[in-house]
Structure formats: C-alpha cells, structure tokens
Length: 286
Ligand code: SPD
Image 1 (tube, rainbow, N blue to C red):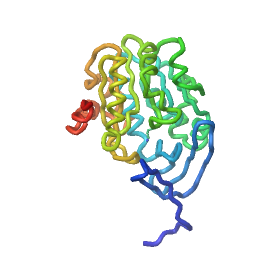
Image 2: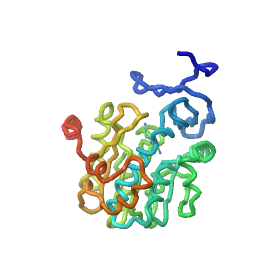
Image 3: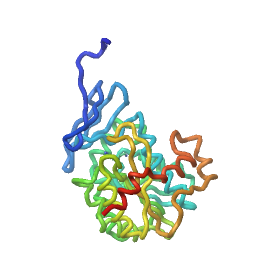
C-alpha cells in the first residue's frame, strides 16, 4: 500500500526496555523540557493528538474519554452530592472536564506540578484543556504532595490523575500522601488514583493498594479498557472515608449524565470492580 505522507515519522513508547507501541506522526506540535520532565504534543495519523511526558503516552484524542470518564464518574456518582473536587496532576484538563459535568460541583481545584503541561494542553489540546477556563475551576501550578500536606478546606473527592510512579509522581504513591488525602476529605469523601496496569505492573498495583488500605482501612481496584496504554487493561484505586460498597453507583445520577458520556454507565461501573482471577490472586500475594 502506498502512502501520501512524505516521510515516515513515528512516536513510540517503550516500557521496561522490553516492549512498546508506536504511532505514525503527521506533525510535531510541541516539544519542551521543563524542570520536571520532557513534554511533547504530536498529531498522529490514527489517534489524533497525543500528549507524551518523558516519552510515555499520557492522553490521546481518540480514547481519552475512557480514562477521564472512569477516573471522575465512579467516585462522583458514589458521593451523594459532590461540591468540591480536587484533581492532583491531570494538567491536560480531561479529568476536570468530566468533574464539571456533575451539577452539584461548585469548585474544581487542579493542582499540577508542571506549568508546561497545562500551557501545552491549552495551546494544542482544547478538547480537554478548555475545561480549565470554566469559572468553577482554580488552576494551581504547584506540588500536589505539598498542597495536600497543608491545611485547607476539605474536598468531597480527590482524583489523583498522576503520571507513572517515578520521578515527580513517585510521592503520589506513598503513605504520607494518602494520610494527607484522608485528612483533607469530607466525611462522605472518596479518593480515586491512577493505578497502572495488571498485566505488567501487578506488583506496583499491590503496593499502591497496601498504601491506600493503610490510610483508609479498605481500598479496591477497578478496571477500564485503554487503547493506547501498554497492556490494554488498566486500573484505578478507590477508597472512601466512610465504609461503603464502591461498586454500586446511584443509578438515577448516572442516567442523568448519560447523554454526555461515551464510555461510563451503571453497568460499566459495577462490572469494573469485578477483577480477573490473576489480579485477585496477585493482589493478595506477599
Ligand atoms: N502510562 C500512563 C499513565 C496515566 C497517566 N495519566 C494520564 C493523564 C490523563 N489526564
């Protein structure tokens, strides 16, 4: 098959020096190096625009809705009336966009350590970043770990939309951070965090669950399908300040959101908490 494209350029994500994925690039829109990491936005042939941080894919226009709907709507349909939401990381704005779909939400605070991510998203990823201009949103460029450790008004939900667990993001997977998250939640509050994937990173998932359980007493993983992250099956970790069944959403609230969503629904919510056997066994091993 011939191609009309002049020269082939590809962007690739290599994991553990052993496997990877690549996408054909039409155009490089942004390349920068901040104090924390490298930041790139490329236009691809098949997946729209993509944001990469340190060479790892963070979001693609083609499937970002799955990740962003699942990080936001699972906790926000469990909380009876979320008013104040905190997003840690998530500088592309996709998680904020989904939180704003809840009519009770009055304030979303986004705490992103790297201003370059927010600037690049505002310029090149309007589908997610335009949510940051909503008057209910406060964008703070600062370290999420320090923000959580400080005193402040509590939140109904904390959504940890982090990069992978190394570099600037590493402390977001640790016990001190989760003790602070619990302290900054209201009595009905919930936390959800990006929790990597079971096929390649089950040990890391087990470690994060142990940390979140240490702070909250109990915690669960729930799964979602991802087209562009390695392994295809990915997870979030969830915990609640008060004991509750995380797998049962408020059906009426879910139904009211439905016309504006593309992935999340009540059946997906319930099923996401049903873990495959290899996960169940691997997550208790120690
Ligand atoms: N390997 C990718 C891990 C997920 C990182 N977060 C994605 C940011 C989307 N808002």
